[in-house]
Length: 596
Image: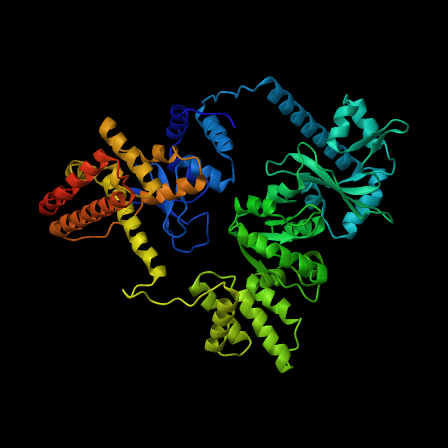
């Protein structure tokens, strides 16, 4: 990715007013100094999505999405930072510098570009073949499967005819040399037979990356022949474990979840029925690479695999992988039909949507599959089943989450909650995985310590928002607190930028601070820092009291934190701690009086 200086990033960002840009995607209504609209990142009926012209930031109080104009394009368009910069620079008429590459890197980049070019040429050739006389077999197959001309065009479907060197000869005529054609995965080169096509007598499915570039192909044989489905081999531009069929289209869907299928035709049938959020793995098992790719675009995946034994096994493999990536998984039940294509042909899109709406929780689906291994009418079988369930429930480390699932299972199988909970705890103690939590002598459980920490984080967040909303508070609080008193690492970095901007420029530019952070999650959290909800306090004395309490909390926490982490040999740090402790009395006596 090209390196852009902070100055250039700020030039591009400040040249694009955030209200103007977001208004092109979201209908906004001005209320006071802020614009509000329905959040484009989650479903809602009451607008909680705010866009501040003054701060040049957006923030959703419903789902927590937030950032500056660059972040918005990255989140809404699922664009990379570079792509967002290029779009915004183009809008503003700003020319971005081109990246300088080493000789070897330039050669690799050129070869990648030529391989992409070959794939594009091949895709156009297959596309044309399908619509010619020699492609009649392929066209009959697609129309027989109920595909419209528009959907065939949308997915660029094609046909590789019956001659096994047809594409090779065509690409040679276009000037591509054998070594490059071999690397493309479209052709094999044999000394005796010459060039031979990888695909022939097959209907063709171009595989595109998220930027709509053709990186490989899938082909289904016409008539008898093995294998039934054939994919391009892995190449410099095609990695099966890091790409998903249809994701180039599904990533732009406004639906808040992704439908994960098994095959090309399922994806195409779903898109044709209006489900533009369907994707499939590329003839390989679902991997963590696939899950991490999906995480860029969604937090929820609905597995809509075949309803046969192989499909159930595929779902059981995919669920833990999705969970590991931090994605919520649900299972769509299509029985008595085999797959989404067959289901929609039989019952239609509305019925399929109903199946999505009633999709099973992935853990409950696993329990239902597990149930099939036991005879619940037999007492011994029933006991074995509950023992197996108890062992699975130990996968949940959080007691609250585990208890929620114990309750759900107890209700479904009509067994007592307390009996099942005790079995889980007994099982956990026996295998050394879980222990029943006991209160400490103080009466506070270990797990309850975190809310206290969260409370301090909230105080630090509140202080940053307050400083941003009312710059006068810098003058009042600076004798007592500074960036070093924000003990959360991310908050401290933000505070350092806030204080530096105020000291150097006399004002704070929060949108510029967001650009200092590379990770989208960090940008979102920083946006949240500047949007803590300030309590509506009616009297001046209450405002002053609230501010003073917040400053005291921050300082006491800072002293405690530094005391715990102080190096005994750090005499300067020790002296600062002693001075700060002495100044706490002065802080408690201080008056924070200001007018807004």
